[in-house]
Amino acid sequence: MQSQQKPEDPLAPQSPLPLYASTTTSEPNPKRKPKKCLKITCCVLISITIVLIAILLFFGLFLFKKRNIEVISNSATLNNVSYSLNPITLNLVMTLILGIRNPNYAGFDYQQTNTTIFYHGTEAGISTMPAGGVKARSSKTIYNTVTMNGTAIMSSQYLLPDLTSGKLPISTNTTMVGKIILFNSIKIHATVQTTCDITINLQSQTSDANCKGNVKMS
Ligand SMILES: *[C@@H]1O[C@H](CO)[C@@H](O)[C@H](O)[C@H]1NC(C)=O
Ligand SMILES: *[C@@H]1O[C@H](CO)[C@@H](O)[C@H](O)[C@H]1NC(C)=O
Ligand SMILES: *[C@@H]1O[C@H](CO)[C@@H](O)[C@H](O)[C@H]1NC(C)=O
Ligand SMILES: *[C@@H]1O[C@H](CO)[C@@H](O)[C@H](O)[C@H]1NC(C)=O
Image (cartoon, rainbow, N blue to C red; front, side, top):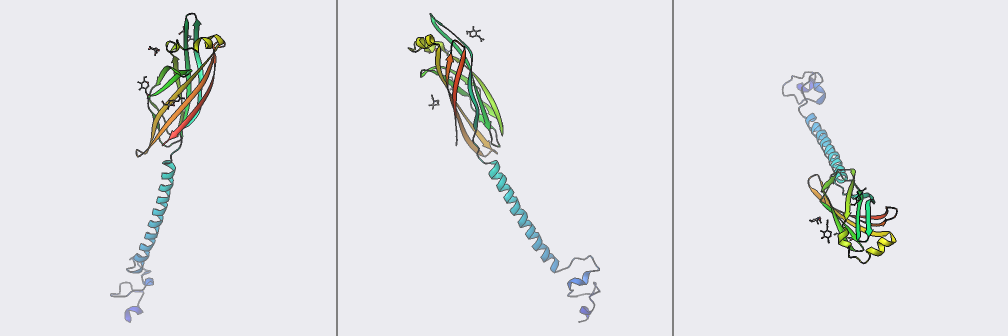
């Protein structure tokens, strides 16, 4: 009874001590405050954890998302063509232009890539591009010079008529194989296949190319 009568004395021994008793001292409340503190700390920790998980989930899904490689430019230009009818000879050099955009948050690394030239379905030359890469979220234009092997098509039944008419149809096939590794863990395979149908005009020394690109991701 006495001790409750003197709440203003904080040093009273064995006091059950109501909360408001300690207003004059900096001593922590022995009972209620730690519980409240624990509750608040718990709530804050849970909230922070939820927010962190949400942020990680968002960035995880966002950054790890598989995005398709895009072919942004795809064309062919004639560098040089020369020919004769007697004897039949043909020298042809072209440049294929392939622009690739990589929208992923990791680089696209491609292997050594071959371009094959066909003349009326007959293989008439291969050109090899070295392996390389397209950095994360950027574009790259690759120029690939291809030389037609005149010897390989010398016996073609189409050659003399085509040379005489002045229009030479050729086609190219480029298959680029590569991969994207997201954060050293998720490997995405990508194949970029482009084909061009090109008509060479021998008189004007010009070319008309119709190219198509096709991207496969897995
Ligand atoms: C075109 O090719 C011929 C034969 O290979 C060569 O003599 C000539 O210098 C070349 N011209 C150009 C502009 O490259
Ligand atoms: C590209 O062509 C070269 C020479 O013909 C060949 O050795 C190589 O295996 C080819 N590479 C691919 C990826 O097809
Ligand atoms: C051109 O084709 C001929 C016949 O197929 C072949 O013997 C020759 O090695 C080829 N030349 C080049 C430079 O590929
Ligand atoms: C191009 O090359 C790929 C791989 O070698 C092949 O699967 C495809 O059929 C070829 N396309 C054409 C039009 O030759």
